[in-house]
Image (cartoon, rainbow, N blue to C red; front, side):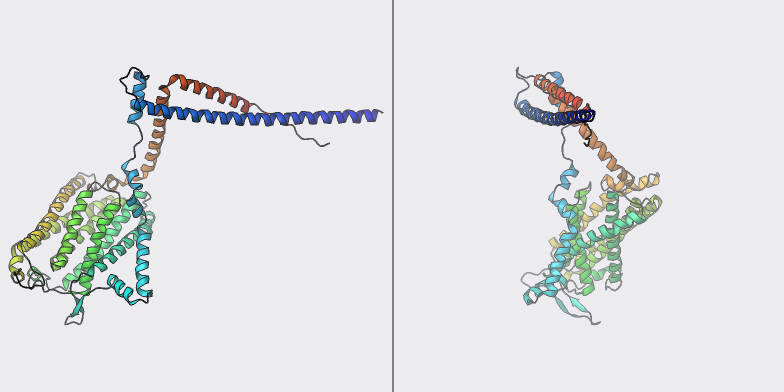
Length: 497
């Protein structure tokens, strides 16, 4: 009997414990449901508050501040003015990065690569003679007129040379972008200890300029040493326009033309700098001179001017590379070489060639003057000569403007500040600040968040009664929810029978 009694008592206890456990589980489940419902109600109240705020914003814009029904007092007006003053506005950088040109700039490699693959695939894989004859113009020089006494092919100018130039505009775009991304930027990070994104990009840009202008200058000098006008400027104009070109010279001149056309493309797809219009004017004048000199058989003087420009730009690009790499003393030394070459070549030799052309070209080309009613290969008129002289003079004016800016940099070098390029934007002139830009951006973001909080408070002040009710309700709901959430809910352990 005692054993049965103990067994029944134990069974009742277990049943009671199970009932209590079930009740606790049920209460815990109900509390969770209530918390979820309260959170949903809180979210709904916040959404209603945001909607009321937006409606009030529209009403505030529509209402006149001079009417007697205006409910905004002096303090609220000051808050509203603050909101208007600090309203977020897109910066020029943001507008550029969202533009179509920025998309093209970021995709220069795939665009140019795919165009080149398409062209060369059609040329080498197509069995259609018409397609091959058309793609041939993009890849090979046109209008061979014979051979010289040495057995080398000579060429005349031709309208189909434009295809060759277009191909090289695409090729130069690909080479520039690919070398910058896969060669010069990794080199800057590994060997020059440049880790800022902008500084690496600018180092890569100047590296490309250094390489191109170095190769162009060396090859230009090679052609000049074998030219009939070597150390004889009169030969530039004697027997004009009966000039022909060897294949290497024609390629050199057309590739130079493609490079400067591509420079205009780069100038417009990349972020504009302070000297954008100066550079644009320089590139337009340079392209007009190269294209015009090629068409009118003035490519001999064009060859000399290209060598003068390329040689100076080598020192400029080298000085900038040293500046970005942190070699300030070497940068100052390179800048001195650049300054001397600029003065000697772009103002000395250039103006000497300009004066020679102004004073002697008409006399030396007297046989090529236009004659009415006579068919001529090319002929000149005073207007044509004046246009070319005007373009050469305009190029010298831009060079003089840059000379003034260069002298400002030279003054900084003399007083010990160091060489900085004042022609471009501030990112060019202070590489050390590049690594702090990300931290500055984070501060600006945090400042923007603080401004948003102030704006929220300004809108809250415009309708105190409704907003205070909403805030009190949200606060009470949140406190009750937090209190219940903070209270521990006992969960009994499951016991085995």
